[in-house]
Length: 534
Image 1 (cartoon, rainbow, N blue to C red):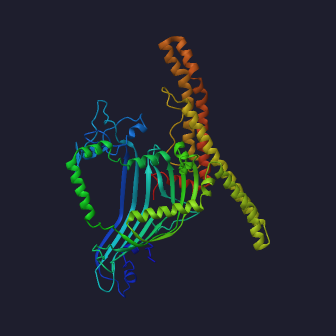
Image 2 (image 1 turned 90 degrees about the vertical axis):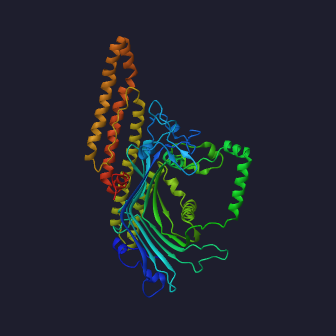
Protein backbone atom coordinates (compact mmCIF):
# COMPACT_ATOMS: atom_id res chain seq x y z
CA UNK A 1 0.00 0.00 0.00
CA UNK A 2 1.35 3.43 -0.98
CA UNK A 3 -0.39 6.31 0.87
CA UNK A 4 -1.21 9.40 -1.19
CA UNK A 5 -0.95 12.81 0.57
CA UNK A 6 -4.34 14.33 1.35
CA UNK A 7 -3.39 17.96 0.81
CA UNK A 8 -0.77 20.26 -0.67
CA UNK A 9 0.63 20.92 2.80
CA UNK A 10 1.48 17.22 3.15
CA UNK A 11 3.34 17.54 -0.12
CA UNK A 12 5.64 20.29 1.10
CA UNK A 13 6.13 18.96 4.60
CA UNK A 14 6.75 15.57 6.18
CA UNK A 15 8.97 12.70 5.09
CA UNK A 16 6.56 11.15 2.51
CA UNK A 17 6.32 8.05 4.75
CA UNK A 18 9.94 7.27 3.95
CA UNK A 19 10.62 5.44 7.22
CA UNK A 20 7.76 2.99 6.65
CA UNK A 21 8.70 2.43 3.02
CA UNK A 22 12.36 1.90 3.87
CA UNK A 23 11.57 -0.35 6.83
CA UNK A 24 13.71 1.68 9.24
CA UNK A 25 13.00 3.37 12.56
CA UNK A 26 13.98 6.80 11.22
CA UNK A 27 13.47 8.32 7.81
CA UNK A 28 16.51 7.96 5.52
CA UNK A 29 18.57 11.05 4.82
CA UNK A 30 17.49 13.09 1.78
CA UNK A 31 20.20 13.47 -0.82
CA UNK A 32 18.24 15.82 -3.13
CA UNK A 33 14.74 17.27 -3.17
CA UNK A 34 12.84 18.76 -6.11
CA UNK A 35 9.70 20.83 -5.42
CA UNK A 36 7.39 22.26 -8.09
CA UNK A 37 4.32 24.22 -7.04
CA UNK A 38 1.42 25.58 -9.12
CA UNK A 39 2.92 24.95 -12.54
CA UNK A 40 0.85 25.37 -15.71
CA UNK A 41 1.70 23.43 -18.86
CA UNK A 42 -0.15 24.04 -22.15
CA UNK A 43 0.71 22.12 -25.33
CA UNK A 44 -1.13 23.27 -28.47
CA UNK A 45 -1.07 21.20 -31.67
CA UNK A 46 -2.29 22.87 -34.85
CA UNK A 47 -3.99 20.90 -37.58
CA UNK A 48 -2.23 20.73 -40.92
CA UNK A 49 1.41 20.24 -41.78
CA UNK A 50 4.06 22.95 -41.79
CA UNK A 51 7.19 21.11 -42.90
CA UNK A 52 7.90 19.32 -46.15
CA UNK A 53 10.75 17.32 -47.64
CA UNK A 54 12.97 19.74 -49.62
CA UNK A 55 13.47 17.15 -52.37
CA UNK A 56 10.00 15.71 -52.93
CA UNK A 57 8.08 18.75 -51.54
CA UNK A 58 5.75 16.26 -49.84
CA UNK A 59 4.61 16.40 -46.19
CA UNK A 60 7.14 14.67 -43.95
CA UNK A 61 4.41 12.43 -42.54
CA UNK A 62 2.88 11.73 -45.93
CA UNK A 63 -0.55 13.16 -45.14
CA UNK A 64 -2.14 16.04 -47.04
CA UNK A 65 -4.65 17.39 -44.54
CA UNK A 66 -5.75 20.25 -46.76
CA UNK A 67 -7.82 17.83 -48.82
CA UNK A 68 -10.10 17.40 -45.81
CA UNK A 69 -11.24 21.02 -46.07
CA UNK A 70 -10.56 22.51 -49.49
CA UNK A 71 -12.45 25.68 -48.62
CA UNK A 72 -9.96 26.72 -45.92
CA UNK A 73 -7.75 29.61 -46.97
CA UNK A 74 -4.06 28.76 -46.90
CA UNK A 75 -2.08 30.51 -44.15
CA UNK A 76 1.58 31.17 -43.49
CA UNK A 77 3.62 28.44 -41.84
CA UNK A 78 3.13 28.47 -38.07
CA UNK A 79 6.58 27.22 -37.21
CA UNK A 80 8.17 29.69 -39.62
CA UNK A 81 6.43 32.50 -37.79
CA UNK A 82 7.39 31.16 -34.39
CA UNK A 83 11.02 30.39 -35.15
CA UNK A 84 11.56 33.27 -37.62
CA UNK A 85 13.89 31.04 -39.57
CA UNK A 86 13.94 29.93 -43.20
CA UNK A 87 14.94 26.35 -42.45
CA UNK A 88 15.23 23.82 -39.70
CA UNK A 89 18.23 21.53 -39.92
CA UNK A 90 18.25 18.11 -38.29
CA UNK A 91 20.92 15.47 -37.86
CA UNK A 92 20.42 13.66 -41.14
CA UNK A 93 17.97 15.67 -43.22
CA UNK A 94 16.85 19.27 -43.68
CA UNK A 95 13.18 20.20 -43.60
CA UNK A 96 11.95 23.57 -44.82
CA UNK A 97 8.60 25.36 -44.65
CA UNK A 98 6.45 25.02 -47.79
CA UNK A 99 7.13 27.74 -50.33
CA UNK A 100 4.71 30.64 -50.43
CA UNK A 101 2.78 30.94 -53.64
CA UNK A 102 1.40 33.97 -55.32
CA UNK A 103 -1.82 33.74 -53.40
CA UNK A 104 -0.01 33.97 -50.10
CA UNK A 105 -0.48 30.31 -49.25
CA UNK A 106 2.11 27.81 -48.11
CA UNK A 107 2.47 25.27 -50.88
CA UNK A 108 0.18 22.26 -50.83
CA UNK A 109 -0.10 21.81 -47.08
CA UNK A 110 -0.34 24.38 -44.33
CA UNK A 111 -1.19 24.71 -40.66
CA UNK A 112 -4.71 25.90 -39.90
CA UNK A 113 -4.31 28.46 -37.18
CA UNK A 114 -7.93 28.35 -36.04
CA UNK A 115 -8.06 24.56 -35.79
CA UNK A 116 -6.06 22.92 -33.06
CA UNK A 117 -6.23 20.59 -30.09
CA UNK A 118 -4.65 21.50 -26.78
CA UNK A 119 -3.49 19.64 -23.70
CA UNK A 120 -3.65 21.74 -20.53
CA UNK A 121 -2.30 20.84 -17.10
CA UNK A 122 -2.94 23.44 -14.40
CA UNK A 123 -1.94 23.59 -10.77
CA UNK A 124 0.79 20.97 -11.15
CA UNK A 125 2.62 20.11 -7.94
CA UNK A 126 5.53 17.71 -7.72
CA UNK A 127 7.86 16.54 -5.00
CA UNK A 128 10.75 14.18 -5.58
CA UNK A 129 13.00 13.05 -2.72
CA UNK A 130 16.16 11.10 -3.54
CA UNK A 131 17.60 9.34 -0.52
CA UNK A 132 21.15 8.60 0.52
CA UNK A 133 22.22 5.06 -0.29
CA UNK A 134 22.64 2.84 2.74
CA UNK A 135 23.07 -0.81 3.54
CA UNK A 136 20.13 -0.56 5.95
CA UNK A 137 17.54 -0.01 3.22
CA UNK A 138 17.00 -0.09 -0.53
CA UNK A 139 14.80 3.00 -0.82
CA UNK A 140 16.03 5.17 -3.71
CA UNK A 141 13.38 7.88 -4.19
CA UNK A 142 9.79 8.92 -3.56
CA UNK A 143 7.85 11.00 -6.10
CA UNK A 144 4.43 12.57 -5.74
CA UNK A 145 2.62 14.31 -8.62
CA UNK A 146 -0.71 16.12 -8.50
CA UNK A 147 -2.67 18.28 -10.95
CA UNK A 148 -5.61 20.48 -9.91
CA UNK A 149 -7.04 20.47 -13.42
CA UNK A 150 -6.22 18.67 -16.66
CA UNK A 151 -8.13 18.61 -19.91
CA UNK A 152 -7.84 18.10 -23.67
CA UNK A 153 -9.67 20.73 -25.74
CA UNK A 154 -10.19 21.32 -29.48
CA UNK A 155 -11.46 23.90 -31.96
CA UNK A 156 -11.71 21.54 -34.93
CA UNK A 157 -15.44 20.90 -34.61
CA UNK A 158 -16.47 24.04 -32.70
CA UNK A 159 -16.02 27.77 -33.09
CA UNK A 160 -15.02 28.07 -29.44
CA UNK A 161 -12.54 25.82 -27.61
CA UNK A 162 -14.42 22.83 -26.21
CA UNK A 163 -13.11 20.17 -23.85
CA UNK A 164 -12.85 16.68 -25.29
CA UNK A 165 -11.65 15.18 -22.03
CA UNK A 166 -11.79 16.72 -18.59
CA UNK A 167 -13.22 16.41 -15.12
CA UNK A 168 -16.79 15.23 -14.67
CA UNK A 169 -18.36 17.85 -12.43
CA UNK A 170 -21.39 16.57 -10.51
CA UNK A 171 -21.71 17.46 -6.85
CA UNK A 172 -24.79 15.25 -6.46
CA UNK A 173 -23.20 11.98 -7.64
CA UNK A 174 -19.59 12.54 -6.58
CA UNK A 175 -18.75 15.75 -4.71
CA UNK A 176 -15.10 16.67 -5.01
CA UNK A 177 -12.83 17.05 -2.02
CA UNK A 178 -11.09 20.46 -2.39
CA UNK A 179 -7.80 18.83 -1.40
CA UNK A 180 -7.93 16.32 -4.27
CA UNK A 181 -6.44 16.84 -7.70
CA UNK A 182 -7.89 15.43 -10.89
CA UNK A 183 -4.66 13.42 -11.17
CA UNK A 184 -2.72 12.10 -8.15
CA UNK A 185 0.21 9.74 -8.40
CA UNK A 186 2.86 8.45 -6.02
CA UNK A 187 5.86 6.41 -7.12
CA UNK A 188 8.34 4.68 -4.81
CA UNK A 189 11.60 3.41 -6.31
CA UNK A 190 13.91 0.85 -4.73
CA UNK A 191 17.46 -0.10 -5.58
CA UNK A 192 17.58 -3.68 -6.95
CA UNK A 193 19.14 -6.33 -4.76
CA UNK A 194 21.61 -7.11 -7.55
CA UNK A 195 22.72 -4.09 -9.58
CA UNK A 196 24.19 -6.25 -12.36
CA UNK A 197 22.26 -9.12 -13.90
CA UNK A 198 23.71 -12.54 -14.66
CA UNK A 199 24.28 -11.62 -18.33
CA UNK A 200 26.12 -8.42 -17.39
CA UNK A 201 23.31 -5.88 -17.86
CA UNK A 202 22.50 -2.95 -15.60
CA UNK A 203 19.28 -3.70 -13.72
CA UNK A 204 16.62 -0.99 -13.50
CA UNK A 205 15.23 0.32 -10.25
CA UNK A 206 12.17 -1.45 -8.92
CA UNK A 207 9.22 0.92 -8.65
CA UNK A 208 5.75 0.83 -7.17
CA UNK A 209 3.10 3.24 -8.47
CA UNK A 210 -0.30 4.26 -7.11
CA UNK A 211 -2.49 6.32 -9.49
CA UNK A 212 -5.81 7.98 -8.68
CA UNK A 213 -8.04 9.78 -11.20
CA UNK A 214 -11.16 11.79 -10.45
CA UNK A 215 -14.33 11.10 -12.51
CA UNK A 216 -13.76 12.06 -16.16
CA UNK A 217 -16.08 13.55 -18.80
CA UNK A 218 -15.44 12.71 -22.44
CA UNK A 219 -16.94 14.29 -25.59
CA UNK A 220 -15.60 12.52 -28.67
CA UNK A 221 -16.24 13.51 -32.27
CA UNK A 222 -15.18 11.04 -34.95
CA UNK A 223 -13.75 13.69 -37.27
CA UNK A 224 -11.79 15.31 -34.43
CA UNK A 225 -10.42 11.94 -33.38
CA UNK A 226 -9.37 11.31 -36.98
CA UNK A 227 -7.53 14.66 -37.11
CA UNK A 228 -5.66 13.94 -33.89
CA UNK A 229 -4.64 10.46 -35.05
CA UNK A 230 -3.48 11.75 -38.43
CA UNK A 231 -1.38 14.44 -36.72
CA UNK A 232 0.78 11.81 -35.05
CA UNK A 233 0.77 9.37 -37.97
CA UNK A 234 3.92 8.57 -39.93
CA UNK A 235 4.49 7.20 -43.41
CA UNK A 236 6.90 4.38 -43.92
CA UNK A 237 9.66 4.74 -46.57
CA UNK A 238 8.24 4.40 -50.08
CA UNK A 239 9.19 1.95 -52.78
CA UNK A 240 11.49 4.47 -54.52
CA UNK A 241 13.76 4.54 -51.49
CA UNK A 242 13.83 0.75 -51.50
CA UNK A 243 14.79 0.73 -55.18
CA UNK A 244 17.62 3.18 -54.53
CA UNK A 245 18.95 0.92 -51.79
CA UNK A 246 18.86 -2.07 -54.12
CA UNK A 247 20.78 -0.17 -56.80
CA UNK A 248 23.58 0.86 -54.41
CA UNK A 249 25.52 -2.26 -53.36
CA UNK A 250 28.04 -0.28 -51.29
CA UNK A 251 25.38 1.21 -49.07
CA UNK A 252 23.72 -2.20 -48.85
CA UNK A 253 26.91 -3.75 -47.51
CA UNK A 254 27.32 -0.93 -45.02
CA UNK A 255 23.72 -1.29 -43.86
CA UNK A 256 24.08 -5.05 -43.50
CA UNK A 257 27.25 -4.68 -41.45
CA UNK A 258 25.51 -2.10 -39.24
CA UNK A 259 22.59 -4.46 -38.74
CA UNK A 260 24.97 -7.24 -37.79
CA UNK A 261 26.78 -4.99 -35.36
CA UNK A 262 23.45 -3.97 -33.79
CA UNK A 263 22.59 -7.61 -33.19
CA UNK A 264 25.86 -8.23 -31.43
CA UNK A 265 25.48 -5.27 -29.08
CA UNK A 266 23.72 -5.91 -25.75
CA UNK A 267 20.14 -4.70 -25.49
CA UNK A 268 19.58 -1.32 -23.89
CA UNK A 269 17.82 -0.93 -20.60
CA UNK A 270 14.03 -1.17 -20.94
CA UNK A 271 13.48 1.83 -18.64
CA UNK A 272 11.35 1.83 -15.51
CA UNK A 273 10.45 -1.54 -14.04
CA UNK A 274 7.25 -1.65 -12.01
CA UNK A 275 6.85 -4.28 -9.35
CA UNK A 276 3.27 -3.06 -8.93
CA UNK A 277 1.28 -0.51 -10.93
CA UNK A 278 -2.00 0.13 -9.12
CA UNK A 279 -4.81 2.26 -10.58
CA UNK A 280 -7.88 3.04 -8.50
CA UNK A 281 -11.39 2.81 -9.93
CA UNK A 282 -12.59 5.77 -11.97
CA UNK A 283 -15.96 6.92 -13.34
CA UNK A 284 -16.21 7.92 -16.99
CA UNK A 285 -19.10 9.65 -18.76
CA UNK A 286 -18.93 9.55 -22.56
CA UNK A 287 -20.68 11.27 -25.46
CA UNK A 288 -19.73 10.11 -28.96
CA UNK A 289 -20.68 11.80 -32.24
CA UNK A 290 -19.97 9.78 -35.41
CA UNK A 291 -19.63 11.47 -38.80
CA UNK A 292 -19.10 8.60 -41.24
CA UNK A 293 -19.67 4.85 -41.32
CA UNK A 294 -17.04 2.81 -43.15
CA UNK A 295 -19.20 0.07 -44.67
CA UNK A 296 -16.20 -1.67 -46.26
CA UNK A 297 -14.46 -2.08 -42.90
CA UNK A 298 -17.71 -3.31 -41.34
CA UNK A 299 -18.10 -5.96 -44.05
CA UNK A 300 -14.46 -6.95 -43.51
CA UNK A 301 -15.20 -7.77 -39.87
CA UNK A 302 -14.32 -4.52 -38.07
CA UNK A 303 -17.20 -4.52 -35.60
CA UNK A 304 -15.95 -1.33 -33.97
CA UNK A 305 -17.62 0.46 -36.92
CA UNK A 306 -20.95 -0.33 -35.26
CA UNK A 307 -20.22 2.58 -32.92
CA UNK A 308 -20.53 4.89 -35.94
CA UNK A 309 -24.14 3.90 -36.67
CA UNK A 310 -25.61 6.50 -34.32
CA UNK A 311 -24.44 9.02 -31.69
CA UNK A 312 -24.12 7.91 -28.08
CA UNK A 313 -25.24 10.11 -25.22
CA UNK A 314 -24.38 10.18 -21.52
CA UNK A 315 -22.88 6.70 -21.20
CA UNK A 316 -21.69 6.25 -17.62
CA UNK A 317 -18.92 3.67 -17.31
CA UNK A 318 -17.05 2.40 -14.27
CA UNK A 319 -13.37 1.70 -14.85
CA UNK A 320 -12.49 -1.06 -12.42
CA UNK A 321 -9.42 -0.87 -10.14
CA UNK A 322 -6.52 -2.97 -11.29
CA UNK A 323 -2.99 -3.88 -10.24
CA UNK A 324 -0.30 -4.81 -12.74
CA UNK A 325 2.81 -6.64 -11.61
CA UNK A 326 6.29 -7.01 -13.07
CA UNK A 327 5.88 -4.77 -16.10
CA UNK A 328 8.59 -2.71 -17.83
CA UNK A 329 8.14 0.81 -19.21
CA UNK A 330 5.51 3.52 -18.86
CA UNK A 331 4.12 2.79 -22.31
CA UNK A 332 3.57 -0.87 -21.51
CA UNK A 333 1.96 -0.03 -18.16
CA UNK A 334 -0.46 2.52 -19.62
CA UNK A 335 -1.22 0.32 -22.63
CA UNK A 336 -1.97 -2.70 -20.46
CA UNK A 337 -4.18 -0.55 -18.22
CA UNK A 338 -6.23 0.64 -21.18
CA UNK A 339 -6.50 -2.90 -22.58
CA UNK A 340 -7.73 -4.22 -19.23
CA UNK A 341 -10.35 -1.47 -18.96
CA UNK A 342 -11.49 -2.03 -22.54
CA UNK A 343 -11.81 -5.76 -21.95
CA UNK A 344 -13.88 -5.20 -18.82
CA UNK A 345 -16.16 -2.72 -20.64
CA UNK A 346 -16.72 -5.12 -23.54
CA UNK A 347 -17.49 -8.04 -21.23
CA UNK A 348 -19.64 -6.35 -18.59
CA UNK A 349 -20.88 -2.91 -19.77
CA UNK A 350 -21.84 -3.25 -23.45
CA UNK A 351 -25.53 -2.81 -22.58
CA UNK A 352 -24.78 0.78 -21.55
CA UNK A 353 -23.86 1.63 -25.14
CA UNK A 354 -27.28 0.42 -26.32
CA UNK A 355 -28.95 2.46 -23.61
CA UNK A 356 -26.99 5.54 -24.75
CA UNK A 357 -28.49 5.51 -28.25
CA UNK A 358 -30.82 8.43 -29.15
CA UNK A 359 -34.36 7.75 -28.00
CA UNK A 360 -33.33 4.70 -26.01
CA UNK A 361 -31.61 6.94 -23.47
CA UNK A 362 -34.80 8.93 -22.81
CA UNK A 363 -36.92 5.77 -22.61
CA UNK A 364 -34.40 4.27 -20.18
CA UNK A 365 -34.49 7.35 -17.95
CA UNK A 366 -38.29 7.43 -17.89
CA UNK A 367 -38.34 3.68 -17.17
CA UNK A 368 -36.00 4.25 -14.25
CA UNK A 369 -38.35 6.95 -12.93
CA UNK A 370 -41.33 4.61 -13.28
CA UNK A 371 -39.42 1.95 -11.35
CA UNK A 372 -38.83 4.42 -8.50
CA UNK A 373 -42.51 5.38 -8.61
CA UNK A 374 -43.45 1.76 -7.85
CA UNK A 375 -40.59 0.61 -5.64
CA UNK A 376 -40.20 3.59 -3.30
CA UNK A 377 -43.64 3.12 -1.69
CA UNK A 378 -43.03 -0.66 -1.50
CA UNK A 379 -39.67 -0.20 0.22
CA UNK A 380 -41.11 2.27 2.72
CA UNK A 381 -44.00 -0.08 3.46
CA UNK A 382 -41.57 -2.89 4.21
CA UNK A 383 -39.64 -0.65 6.61
CA UNK A 384 -42.39 1.36 8.31
CA UNK A 385 -45.68 -0.27 7.20
CA UNK A 386 -46.51 3.07 5.55
CA UNK A 387 -46.26 4.14 1.96
CA UNK A 388 -47.44 7.78 1.87
CA UNK A 389 -43.97 9.36 2.03
CA UNK A 390 -42.51 6.83 -0.41
CA UNK A 391 -45.37 7.46 -2.85
CA UNK A 392 -44.73 11.20 -2.63
CA UNK A 393 -40.99 10.79 -3.28
CA UNK A 394 -41.54 8.32 -6.11
CA UNK A 395 -44.14 10.54 -7.79
CA UNK A 396 -41.90 13.59 -7.46
CA UNK A 397 -38.92 11.78 -8.96
CA UNK A 398 -40.98 10.31 -11.80
CA UNK A 399 -42.52 13.67 -12.72
CA UNK A 400 -39.11 15.35 -12.55
CA UNK A 401 -37.60 12.71 -14.83
CA UNK A 402 -40.42 13.04 -17.37
CA UNK A 403 -40.15 16.84 -17.35
CA UNK A 404 -36.36 16.72 -17.74
CA UNK A 405 -36.46 14.26 -20.64
CA UNK A 406 -39.21 16.29 -22.32
CA UNK A 407 -37.05 19.40 -22.14
CA UNK A 408 -33.97 17.53 -23.36
CA UNK A 409 -35.76 15.99 -26.34
CA UNK A 410 -37.48 19.28 -27.20
CA UNK A 411 -34.19 21.17 -27.08
CA UNK A 412 -32.32 18.67 -29.25
CA UNK A 413 -35.10 18.25 -31.82
CA UNK A 414 -35.79 21.96 -32.25
CA UNK A 415 -32.07 22.72 -32.43
CA UNK A 416 -31.66 20.12 -35.17
CA UNK A 417 -34.65 21.50 -37.10
CA UNK A 418 -33.36 25.07 -36.78
CA UNK A 419 -29.90 24.13 -38.04
CA UNK A 420 -31.38 22.13 -40.93
CA UNK A 421 -33.62 25.00 -42.04
CA UNK A 422 -30.72 27.42 -41.69
CA UNK A 423 -28.61 25.27 -44.04
CA UNK A 424 -31.52 25.17 -46.50
CA UNK A 425 -31.89 28.95 -46.67
CA UNK A 426 -28.15 29.64 -46.75
CA UNK A 427 -26.73 30.64 -50.11
CA UNK A 428 -23.93 32.64 -51.69
CA UNK A 429 -25.84 35.89 -51.18
CA UNK A 430 -27.08 35.04 -47.71
CA UNK A 431 -25.14 33.36 -44.90
CA UNK A 432 -28.13 32.09 -42.94
CA UNK A 433 -30.76 33.33 -40.53
CA UNK A 434 -29.29 32.15 -37.22
CA UNK A 435 -26.83 34.15 -35.13
CA UNK A 436 -23.99 32.38 -33.40
CA UNK A 437 -24.92 30.98 -30.00
CA UNK A 438 -23.22 32.67 -27.03
CA UNK A 439 -20.18 30.90 -25.64
CA UNK A 440 -21.56 30.96 -22.11
CA UNK A 441 -24.22 28.42 -21.18
CA UNK A 442 -27.57 30.01 -20.17
CA UNK A 443 -28.20 29.62 -16.45
CA UNK A 444 -31.94 30.34 -16.52
CA UNK A 445 -34.74 31.48 -18.77
CA UNK A 446 -33.84 35.14 -18.27
CA UNK A 447 -30.35 34.67 -19.69
CA UNK A 448 -31.81 33.27 -22.94
CA UNK A 449 -33.77 36.39 -23.87
CA UNK A 450 -30.99 38.22 -25.71
CA UNK A 451 -30.10 35.34 -28.04
CA UNK A 452 -33.76 34.47 -28.61
CA UNK A 453 -34.56 38.04 -29.64
CA UNK A 454 -31.50 38.10 -31.89
CA UNK A 455 -32.59 34.87 -33.60
CA UNK A 456 -36.08 36.16 -34.36
CA UNK A 457 -34.97 39.64 -35.44
CA UNK A 458 -32.25 38.29 -37.75
CA UNK A 459 -34.72 35.93 -39.40
CA UNK A 460 -37.07 38.83 -40.20
CA UNK A 461 -34.15 40.89 -41.47
CA UNK A 462 -33.48 37.96 -43.79
CA UNK A 463 -37.06 38.21 -45.08
CA UNK A 464 -36.68 41.93 -45.69
CA UNK A 465 -33.37 41.42 -47.46
CA UNK A 466 -34.55 38.59 -49.72
CA UNK A 467 -37.96 40.12 -50.60
CA UNK A 468 -37.10 43.84 -50.82
CA UNK A 469 -33.36 44.58 -50.89
CA UNK A 470 -32.10 41.91 -53.28
CA UNK A 471 -35.05 42.22 -55.75
CA UNK A 472 -34.59 45.99 -55.86
CA UNK A 473 -30.94 45.47 -56.73
CA UNK A 474 -31.94 43.03 -59.47
CA UNK A 475 -34.52 45.52 -60.76
CA UNK A 476 -31.80 48.12 -61.25
CA UNK A 477 -29.63 45.61 -63.10
CA UNK A 478 -32.10 43.58 -65.18
CA UNK A 479 -35.42 45.35 -64.89
CA UNK A 480 -38.82 43.98 -63.89
CA UNK A 481 -38.15 40.45 -65.16
CA UNK A 482 -35.03 40.10 -63.04
CA UNK A 483 -36.82 41.41 -59.95
CA UNK A 484 -39.75 38.99 -60.36
CA UNK A 485 -37.38 36.08 -60.96
CA UNK A 486 -35.42 37.02 -57.80
CA UNK A 487 -38.60 37.21 -55.68
CA UNK A 488 -39.76 33.79 -56.85
CA UNK A 489 -36.31 32.35 -56.21
CA UNK A 490 -36.22 33.73 -52.64
CA UNK A 491 -39.72 32.67 -51.59
CA UNK A 492 -38.36 29.57 -49.73
CA UNK A 493 -35.98 31.79 -47.79
CA UNK A 494 -38.76 34.21 -46.89
CA UNK A 495 -40.90 31.34 -45.61
CA UNK A 496 -38.28 29.19 -43.87
CA UNK A 497 -36.08 31.90 -42.32
CA UNK A 498 -38.68 33.05 -39.74
CA UNK A 499 -39.45 29.42 -38.88
CA UNK A 500 -35.73 28.74 -38.39
CA UNK A 501 -35.30 31.81 -36.17
CA UNK A 502 -38.37 31.04 -34.06
CA UNK A 503 -37.32 27.40 -33.68
CA UNK A 504 -33.84 28.42 -32.55
CA UNK A 505 -35.32 30.90 -30.06
CA UNK A 506 -37.62 28.19 -28.65
CA UNK A 507 -34.75 25.68 -28.45
CA UNK A 508 -32.47 28.08 -26.58
CA UNK A 509 -35.29 29.07 -24.21
CA UNK A 510 -35.98 25.40 -23.44
CA UNK A 511 -32.26 24.95 -22.71
CA UNK A 512 -32.43 27.81 -20.19
CA UNK A 513 -35.49 26.25 -18.52
CA UNK A 514 -33.73 22.90 -18.25
CA UNK A 515 -30.60 24.48 -16.75
CA UNK A 516 -32.71 26.39 -14.24
CA UNK A 517 -34.44 23.16 -13.31
CA UNK A 518 -31.23 21.09 -13.05
CA UNK A 519 -28.20 23.26 -12.11
CA UNK A 520 -26.01 20.14 -11.85
CA UNK A 521 -26.45 19.38 -15.56
CA UNK A 522 -25.86 23.06 -16.35
CA UNK A 523 -22.52 22.93 -14.53
CA UNK A 524 -21.49 19.88 -16.55
CA UNK A 525 -22.23 21.73 -19.79
CA UNK A 526 -20.62 24.90 -18.50
CA UNK A 527 -17.41 23.18 -17.49
CA UNK A 528 -17.03 21.81 -21.02
CA UNK A 529 -16.12 25.32 -22.17
CA UNK A 530 -12.47 26.23 -21.72
CA UNK A 531 -13.31 29.62 -20.21
CA UNK A 532 -14.80 27.78 -17.23
CA UNK A 533 -12.01 26.08 -15.34
CA UNK A 534 -11.11 25.40 -11.76
